[in-house]
Length: 97
Image (cartoon, rainbow, N blue to C red; front, side, top):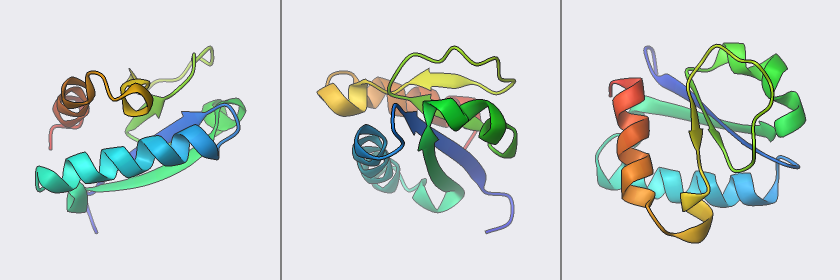
């Protein structure tokens, strides 16, 4: 979709926790009618610096030490289940969707 916002979800290996976070993020965005406005990709935290430029926002389930020029949102709420709504609202606000 033209004009969609791109979210990059990063975790230690780019597999397990990022997949869990993506599934919960997609569900939350779908319930708010926003899922069609975004494209979500995933990566390992080590790939973040090279992939961030192609995206509008990063959701990280681990600490980000790379210097990147887009907003980074801590996504541990998607793993713990605590504070998910606040994180989703933060993402929506930062992307202006």
